Structure formats: C-alpha cells, structure tokens
Image 1 (cartoon, rainbow, N blue to C red):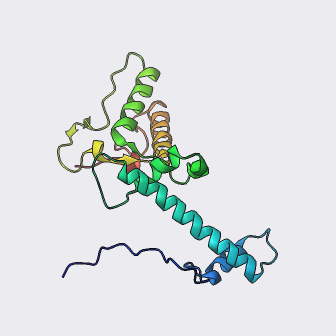
Image 2: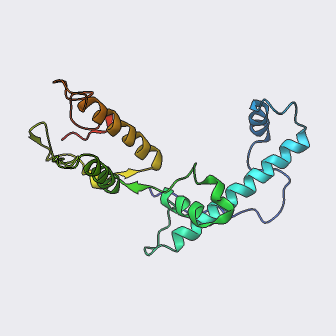
Image 3: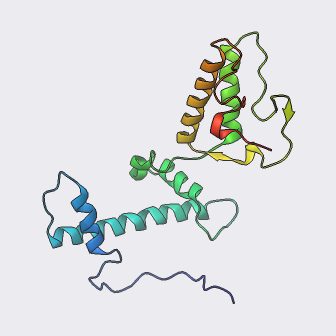
Length: 187
C-alpha cells in the first residue's frame, strides 16, 4: 500500500491556534534561569515567532533543494546547511547547522599537516597499509561526510597519537592500532 506523500497545504484562514504546543514552549521558557516568569500572551507570541522562524528556515531549504541540478522532492541536511551558509538572516545558525566536509578532504588536510611536521619521514595514508595489514573491505573513507566538529575531534586524536608516538619507547602511541583511535575504519 503506497504512502500518502502529498504535502499538507498551510491553512488559509487564521484560526488563532498555533501549530506548536504553547505549554511546551512555556516549559522551555521556564528552563532559562534569567526569566522569572512568563505570561500566557508572551508564551503565545514566542510560539508564533518560533513557527514563523521554522517556516522561513524550511522555505530557504526548499529553495536550495529546488535550485539543485537534480530536482528532488526531499529536503536534505545539505540543503539546510547551504541555506544557512548563503542567507545572511540565518548566519547565526552556522555553528548549529554547519556544512559537511567529505572525509577525503579531512584526511588529505591531515596528511599535509603531518608531512609539514615530519620533513624527511615517510607517512602512510590513513586508509592505506596500517600495522602491516592492507584494508580492502568495508565502506570507503571517501564516502563519509564529516562536520567541522568531527574534524576538530580528528585533529585532537591525531595530535594525541603523534605525541604518544614521538615520545620514544616501544609502545607506538595510544591504542596501539596505528589509526585514529575510535575513528579508525576497519575492514
């Protein structure tokens, strides 16, 4: 049985009832320590403003979806991220909805940094041979999408690994896997 995928049209008439629950908005407002109290009319206005904001964000994401080379009917994360990056009114969301970066670019950036630090030493690529084993199966690292937050975590993992392996001894770094700790792809 096929699903009903037709869009629900917005109400043409003003009913006076918001689509978001006012009681939940009041609970969210009460969570803020700076706000002592909130009247019902103020909570109603905040609810209406939140609805209008969500509608605006969805419209901007839809414009990005329709402007894509492939005509899609489903809005994706990348559409919202590009809307935030291209629209001045949504610039404050750039930390909340960042654009994704392919893992391949992150890996190449890390390899370039490592080569600069270790002039004269041979550095194996992350997806290549590690601990004498060739990784041949599993998902490709190039197909992974990485946000700037994950990129920062990978930076810290690489720095910790380099600090552990440059200290001498026979331990060979943290974890002993030769990869990026919890981000290593296994085959």
